[in-house]
Image 1 (cartoon, one colour):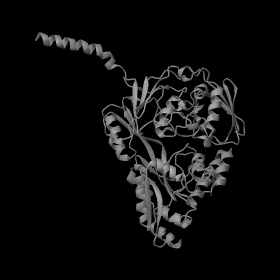
Image 2 (cartoon, helix red, strand yellow; image 1 turned 120 degrees about the horizontal axis):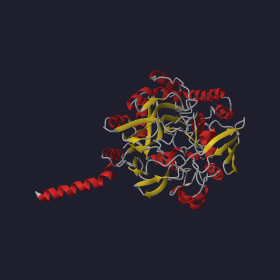
Image 3 (cartoon, helix red, strand yellow; image 1 turned 30 degrees about the horizontal axis):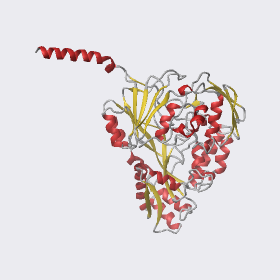
Image 4 (cartoon, helix red, strand yellow; image 1 turned 90 degrees about the vertical axis):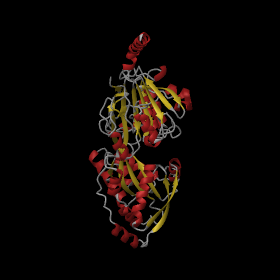
Length: 516
C-alpha cells in the first residue's frame, strides 16, 4: 500500500510539472496538402496550388486582397501605404511603408527591391507570370520609399497585378541575387512567416517573423505536410496529426467532413470553371453547327446536380461567374432533337468518332465521362487517350487534341480569362501561345479595346460583347464551376471571415491562432 501511495504521489507531481506545457496554447499549425512534394518557393515561378499557399505566407505585394476575399474590389495597402495615378492610368506612384524588414537580416525593404521584383516578374526567363506583366514599360525607384510604374498602355487590373498574388509578390533583391537558383528552396520575403526547413517528400516548415510590420504572429510555426493520398490526409486529420487539410474535391467529402465533431469544412471562391474547348480549325469541329450540336448535348444542370450543389454551381458564361465583368449568357438547355438536326445539316446524320487526349486526374476524368455520355446520345463517340495530368497539360499546349476539357480560375477580372483562353495571340502552338485551345479569334477587338477603356461601364460592355461573341461562335461549352474545398479544426481561429482566397487556400496571417 505504501509503495502505491508513493507511486501515486510521484505521478501527481509529474502531472503538475507537465501541466503548464500540456495546457499551454497550441502555437504550431500543421497543414496537409495534396501534392507529393514541394515544387518551387520562388514566388515568380511557384505555379502549383500547394506552393502558392506557402508563398503567400512568406511574401507581400504592394497591395493585397482583403483577407478572406477573392474579388477585384477593395484592395488594401500592403507594402505600399498609398498610391496615385495620372488621368490616363499609365503612370502610377506608390509610397512604401518605412521600416519593413526582409527576413534573415537582409535589411530594410526599399523601392529598389520592389522595382527589381516587378522587372523580374515581367522577365520570361525568370518568371512564370511574365505574360500578365507584359504592359509594364518601366518600374523605377524615385527615392528610397517611392516607386514609379509606367505602363505601355492602361490596363484594368494594375492594382491586382501588384497584389499578393503570382507575379505581384515582392522579393528582397539582395537575397534573390545572392542565392540565384537556390532562392526557390530558401526564399526570403517580408511576410508574417519565414522559411525554416524542407524535408523532401515530407514537409516545409515556416517560423514566425518576429519583425513583421503588422505585428508578431500568434503562431510560432506552420508546417505544410505532403500527403498526396486523399484517404491518408483524411486519416491524419481525424487522428489529430494535422489541423487543416486540402480536401478531396467533391461534395461527398464536404458532406462527410461537416459531420465530424470539431471540424469546420467549407467551399471557397474562386470557383473554377469546367468547360470543353473546341478547336474551331479542326475537322469536323470547324463547322459551327457541329460545335453547337455538341454543346446542346451536354447536360450542364444534370452534371452539376450529380457533382453536388454545395460544392459546385452551373456555369453561366465562357468565363467564371465570379470574375468582374462576367455576364449571364442564358446558356441554352439540353436539346437532343435539335442537336441531331444540326449534325444532319452538317453532313453527320449518324454522328462520328473523334480522338482526343484526356487527363487521369479524377475530377477531370469524371467530367469527361459525363461529356461522353451526353454526346453519345447524338451519335458522337469520344475516343479518349488517357494520360497522367502533367503529360496532359504538356500535350494540350502542343495543340495535340482537338477537344480539350479544362478546369481553371484566374485573376478575378474578365480581361485575364478572356486573354488567356480566347485571344488569338494566346493560341496554343504559336510563339505567343498560352491556353487558347480553341483557336478562337472572334472577340479580339473587344478584349483588346476593353484594356484601354477608362469608362468602367463601357469597359464592362466590351467584356460582355466579347463573351457573347465567343459563345455565338461556340469556341467553348461552359458546364459547371467547382469551389475549392478545405477543412480545419474548430479550435483554429483564422482571424478573418473566409469567403475566398486567390491562392486557393486559407491565408495564414499574423492573427491566425488556436483557442486556449
